[in-house]
Image 1 (spheres, chains in turn brown, green):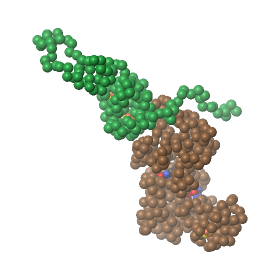
Image 2: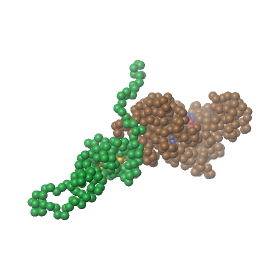
Image 3: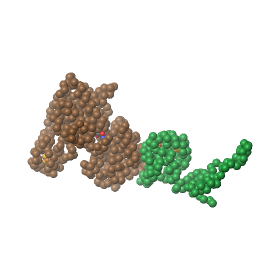
Image 4: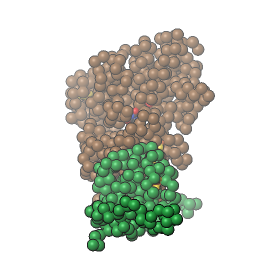
Length: 420
Length: 180
Ligand SMILES: Cc1cc2nc3c(=O)[nH]c(=O)nc-3n(C[C@H](O)[C@H](O)[C@H](O)COP(=O)(O)OP(=O)(O)OC[C@H]3O[C@@H](n4cnc5c(N)ncnc54)[C@H](O)[C@@H]3O)c2cc1C
Ligand code: SF4
Ligand code: SF4
Ligand code: SF4
Ligand code: SF4
């Protein structure tokens, strides 16, 4: 099917990859429907605190340089000021029909309780009821979010008192169908909740967390203001142990290497050792895979005094005082080492997000361990998933932000080229 | 079947693990602060040093393990190990280490630290004693060989007295203990 320059594109997922693709398509004059199932955009990157390779906030990556005046939060201006982007949050694609180049996508859009164009983030509603919250000062859309499950009397008051009349508690979900020529899948990843790996006690012992949860503890915008505290009692953390390859490289869970967990585990280890007062970190690993330029994180971690233990955790016991007694087998020394730690952090596998299998099936795409694989396995063009169907970012499998952004740009350039 | 669903407990009897909290983190820093120790922490346990070593195959603790033990703070075990004294000081490990860890030099540092604490194997003390007492390690004994070649029995100009005096004043002399 031949497409013309102005044909609209559907981008599924508004993480870093989807946002990059959507803003660049829109900047090129292409109408773009950007859909995300969450109430705010940004995806997983919203929760990372400092991001490698620059140790900067993720909003500041490469792409922001082309937009004048704004170093931080370029997506704020990109999303709000770009008339070619039709952003739909709380929304999912329920059905895709038609043929390549002439798709129809049915969208189900959740109730729009808050009109983000009207909300001025004055905070009045948050004072009235806990059903309103502000996910982050930089969140996009720039508006509070409302959780109907927590609704109370205060919520009704807020609706009446909102200075801009931005609240509509009676909002209903809606459905709509959009005509598009191309589809960009940017659905990202989900960090596995390792509840079923009994030996680590995740979900049962409060001081056992995942790396993404640790990132939120370390975030200065978080509950503890960035202080490294124990989830169990808010007490100061003095000793941390991390375990690599939890659910990755394991035929019982995911056979693949999640590729970036070694890098962000060491990113976290370095932040803790170098920026928090006298905390000792140990990392239990099978291989450290800080690929290409990220080797630097490994080197810094060793210099900082992170204790690396090649081997596996043998036993873990929760003590009365909230600490954990851990015995790890050190295969380099052929000895068992005993540790006592406050926080036990699991580098859990990055898995395909919910709904991936259905999406892959409905569009007849190739599955690569549950992520979206290339259409042509010989050319291995990672971003071409099918006829008029593209994929970028962690939807292709675990990927870092710079890689996700690069892939998103590759998708944009392929779409533009196909329309000449 | 219910039996197969039952989970096996971890081993009930476990050989006493090494308690990390009882190790000495200052040991790592101590070695690291010495002129040879700067790159110590760069070690990533690749074991190239052990692969390079011509004699470590007979050692209980291999070179990469000794470096690892230093990093963990296993001061006692390292300083009392016989391996640091068995080292031939051939520098093969050091030359091949991909992280520029000065393995051989670090073992020298360990020997010096061990010596300061009086942890020197008897065989080494014996050698030192020989050196201090005789002023040389290999005494020229086979005079007849010299005679056969028409040389005078005494090596001309070889005087060990000065060496003995100097050596007595050194740490080697102190280790052997002044017996005069
Ligand atoms: C602990 C941790 C630390 C990390 N640190 C770094 C770092 O320092 N530097 C770095 O470069 N990378 C880091 N990463 C990786 C980084 O998170 C990813 O590279 C990046 O978030 C990928 O962006 P994405 O847009 O591809 O996917 P995502 O961020 O996962 O975004 C996907 C979006 O799609 C939406 N979505 C999914 N399915 C659907 C659907 N069916 N319908 C509608 N919407 C859908 C989701 O809600 C989400 O908003 C880290 C990852 C973890 C886990
Ligand atoms: S009261 Fe209205 S304007 Fe103020 S934060 Fe709430 S929704 Fe936004
Ligand atoms: S990146 Fe590291 S922790 Fe993650 S799966 Fe690969 S080897 Fe394991
Ligand atoms: S060769 Fe160097 S880096 Fe490798 S184990 Fe030996 S000391 Fe460590
Ligand atoms: S210097 Fe010592 S440890 Fe190093 S290779 Fe030679 S004998 Fe082995």
